[in-house]
Amino acid sequence: MNSAFRDVIFVNDFTLFRAWLLALLVAIVGSNLIEDMGFMGEFGLRRQAFAPIAAIVGGYIFGLGIVMAGGCGSGVLYKQGEGQLAALLATLGFGMGLVSTYHGPFQPVMKFLKSYKVSMGEGEAATSTLALWDAIGGLSMKWIVIAVIAAIIIPIILKGKPFGKGPKKGWLWSQGGALIGAIVVAAWWASYYWGGQARGLSFSGPTSDFFMFFLTADSKAPFDPMFDFWGIGMATWSAFYVLGVPVGAYISAKGLSEFKLTSPREAQELLRVFGGGLIMGLGGAIAGG
Image 1 (cartoon, helix red, strand yellow):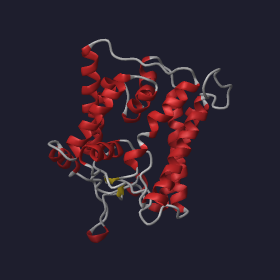
Image 2 (cartoon, one colour):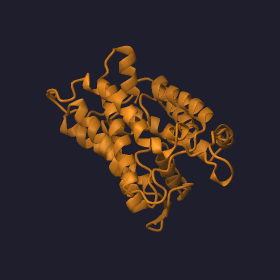
Image 3 (tube, rainbow, N blue to C red):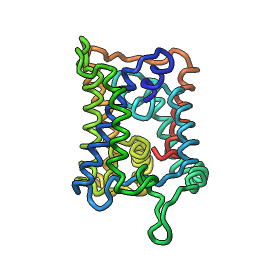
Image 4 (cartoon, rainbow, N blue to C red):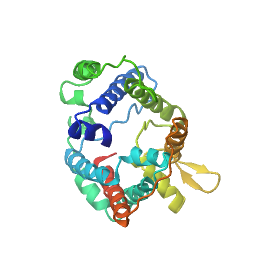
């Protein structure tokens, strides 16, 4: 996320942005398709409540944090696998920011901002768990809205020549984007099939679950089912899936001969990435991911 938008603004390079758009498109179409086919159980994709003030404020704070930390929630995790020790410190800050907001002194701030929700319907039928088509015409508009989104995204993707010749090392951006989108869809399905409710590829909640498990032996997940992990404590599966990111990044970096242990040379950088992680955790929790 950080690199995709940074490259567009500073070097006018849309490569990673197009990869992100492709992943997003595959995820939107694929996840809604398997939901309609009944593969997601009664909870479906478990859309969040629409709390616009929390989304805007939390998103802005999160954006500040990822610039300072040098990556988003998943970014600081995979950079550990590449050998960047600064990313480890950023992840510690990220976890502390999440825990202090979900379970600690900043929780009242988060709850206050999230209390301003947009609801539709009246009485028992009222809901604040909205999708974009709910604001337009309801479920009957679902695939029309998705088609409009696709019509906007596809020309931008095609302009980047997604079927062109790949680089000498690594994958073509379109291969990576399509695969990430497919993994998102698979994660939604697998989360429901093995875990009871679908969560997908989120990092704020799972990182909080991970830190809470190792700090208190209880992930204290508000929604996801928890299990007894070898008698050590109660955890969610998503608390451990975050471990796979640095492991996968390490395998990839070694395969491309790009793994290299690096550490910040100045104390100021250590403080910056750690502080960025803290801010990122605060914003991620408020924004809802």
